[in-house]
Image (cartoon, rainbow, N blue to C red; front, side):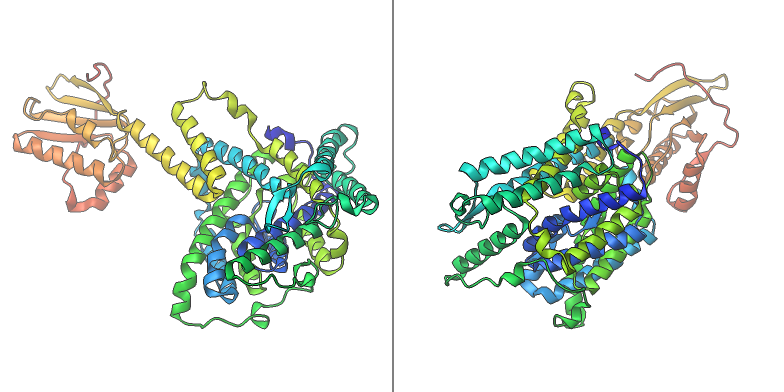
Length: 554
């Protein structure tokens, strides 16, 4: 289904229009993640602007969009709640330095270790999470209980109709013309329609906790602020205070260094011990999500990004974001897919998205707040349809059960825990364990005695820590002849466990008054022997002349 996004090649016009589309979609996401982190909406928007612009200029994957993300917000919410917002910004800066160090050390290549089954689980779980997150657009505030409840009646049907219209435009418009990105055309069309509906609809038709019949970005800001104020008053047992509408709007000035707005935390080792664990977690979560997104965009666009450069770009973006009072972030998969689907392929798309987002903050906040949530939800639902790998549903009877297990595990953990980074790590670990288990039993030997009476064991399969037991069971020093050779022509020795088991076997033959030699050791194995030094004593045959493959050991 990822072919859904391969509809066009890049151009300056496509990059510009897709960047505008992405900027519109970034606003509610950045605001929502700011609420999750317990900071003001402007901090989330500043983060989105800084992350998007910096990674577009310095990152390793043109066309990929970065910004404030839920995964990073979940990590810092505890820091902000327990220590205060002034600890947030040094933490984000330290995260950036760690990410730069990872990229400089060229550890970005580790993304190649992610199996395809993990990628499929990641993509499918992500699609389900994006889909579920859109259900929040169908909620309004119940003033009596102070909780968010689903829409009903006229408001629900209008919302569903506008979402369906948005999806229809995105689906049908490319069949007629590609002059304008379908997502942008859908957002603008539904916005104009919703403005007309809200103007002429009777006020009684709007839900009790909502100013308009069709919920807008501005309504979402106020609803979230009201819900937070009610929850705080219930927790403290106080009256619900007045909400400063200006504090929940997205208008503001240029970002400035954080120490000009907030108090500096103490510059000592105690502060470092507080922020370092959070920074380390942010570094891991941000890089895993960014590199996984990079791989996904690589597959969609059939191009190749630079993982190490992306690590450095993410680090520079977080370093600058923390310095300018942002909450940090990483690659945004949903917005990246919107960008690709809209034709964005180059760095210009990310630059335009960032510049437009800054213009929204400085000049156009009142207009942006009129965008209906139905339009943005419709765009994201189309992203879900294009993201989910529907072909994977037909694989259940065609691929090994272990791959299906990994795919379902990663997708399930992603959906249940909303933690993409941990899901990927878990999938890689399980895949590695399955690989080890399978290859632990793949060690065998062909055995033959040559004309000189030397018994030759020609091994097949890897010799590593999980297969040493199988290796040990192949030999019987008591009954073997005086001269025995192990031929490693078709195998390799991996790690100290392999060397140690050969050493122990050689000692057993020596105790029997017999000689054990090894031949056809690879260069890597010879290097291991040289490094081991006196730790192992293995007799390497000088002139290997054994190449047999006749009798399979039972």
